[in-house]
Image (cartoon, rainbow, N blue to C red; front, side, top):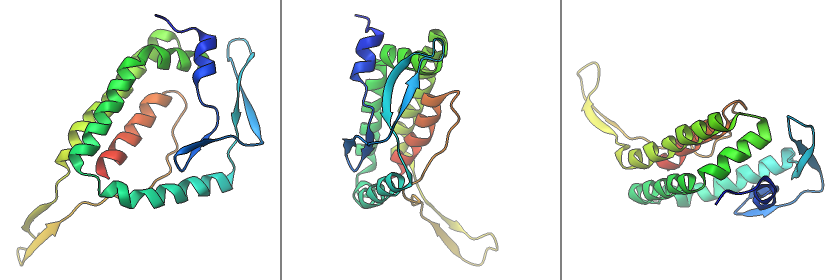
Amino acid sequence: MAITQAALLESIPTGLFINGKWEKTAETFVVEDPATGEKLVDCSSAGPDDGRRALDAAVAAQEGWAKTAPRVRGEILRRAWEIVQDRREELSLLMTIEMGKPLNEASGEVTYGGEFLRWFAEEAVRINGRYGWNPEGTGHMLVSKHPVGPCLFISPGNVPFAKATRKVGPALAAA
């Protein structure tokens, strides 16, 4: 059954997701329909302090996430891909409403973006180090791969879903 624009807009969170919960802020901004200029929703506006709180929460969570087994991280990413598949119509419609992208292009982006989740779900168990000779041939080297920790990503707005999954997928797979 197709979801209506009104039902979709009513169902999406408009707050900030920090430390595992949604928060509303006093300051908001209006998201407008690019075709008509009509107000769609009011979203919470984040400031520098909100960004720092979010980064601090991510830093605090990173140690625990790093202890999550690669197979479990992969299964979580695979489940995320399944949810994207189940909600592809909603995600496509939301992208069309928010940015004016034609629905068929938005649907294609959801497919493309979802594949990053599936790809990195499979790669989570393949993040290996290596052991071998150093380039000079005078000894051995041991390479161990470790994530850099929480990151802030800046992405263009023309392919928002695909750019987000392309960055979040490997970050979650790597621990």
